[in-house]
Amino acid sequence: MDGFSHSQPPQAYREIQWVADTLVGLMGAGWIINYAAMIWHSYRGETYSMAIIPLCNNIGWELVYTLVFPSPNRVELAVFAAGVTLNVVIMIAATRAAKTEWRHSPLVAAHTPLIFVGGTLLCFTGHLALAAQLGPALAYSWGAVICQLVLSLGGLCQLLQRNSTRGTSWTLWLSRFLGSCCTVGFASLRWKYWPDAFGWLADPLVLWSLAAFVIVDTTYGIVLYKAGSFKICGSPSRCQCNPTVILQLEAIMVEFMLRRPLKSNGTSQNRPVVFMCVLLSPTQSFLRGGQEDTTQYYQL
Image (cartoon, rainbow, N blue to C red; front, top):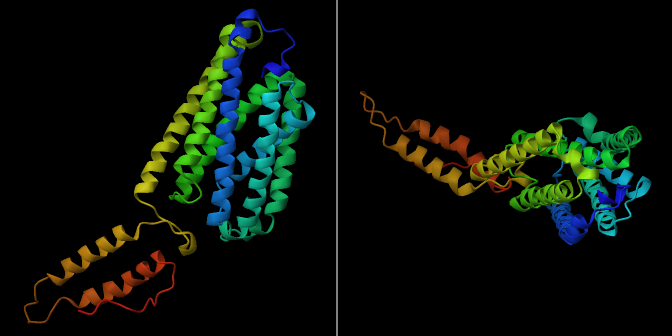
């Protein structure tokens, strides 16, 4: 964050500063799109898109560098102000969806506002402590690294746990991934053209963090593709499954059972078909939102 550097940028950096500022703006645009899409998914699907801990951590970090240590760089400050505002809306939407999303854990569902407030306060004071320890410039960058890794890991774990694209989309992933790649871009320019202030960006731990981010977020894209190919949901009201695939599977099973040969005593072995269809018809009702009579079955 060049707004926190006490040294004056060298001439080489000043010549390409417009490129760095453009990448900062693109980073902000990517994350704003990501946050707006999260809000849309939250109100449309009665769920939330960012896990609780990464959300609290993001808001805590953004509050520190919007209110306590604001950057003199207007582009950066505008990005932070927009980000923290949208993150608060995301938190409100997540609180609204908590009773549905956490119905399996009444303790969390009943105390979600308290969890968010407490978690945000804890992260906010943690980032303040980091700034007091390292100084605002280094703490900003290391805080951003922590936020990125926690968010990437939290998003991947959430996707794996849900085994569904519910609450996410390609827009969400790409806007976050490309926005963070823009961060890598302007950080690289500062490291190359302003080494006195940003030479530490080539340190081993920074490079490890970069590799971890790329690996985790690329894995997220792969899992998102797999989850989109075979979606499993836990709630009919928010089901995004493809009913055609399930119904085709049912048809194949029924056809297989109908072609079974007769027993030696001449009786038909097709009776299990009726039982199987009684079990399968609730699946169709589930896929259509639970509105159908689940006692219906195929007439053989």
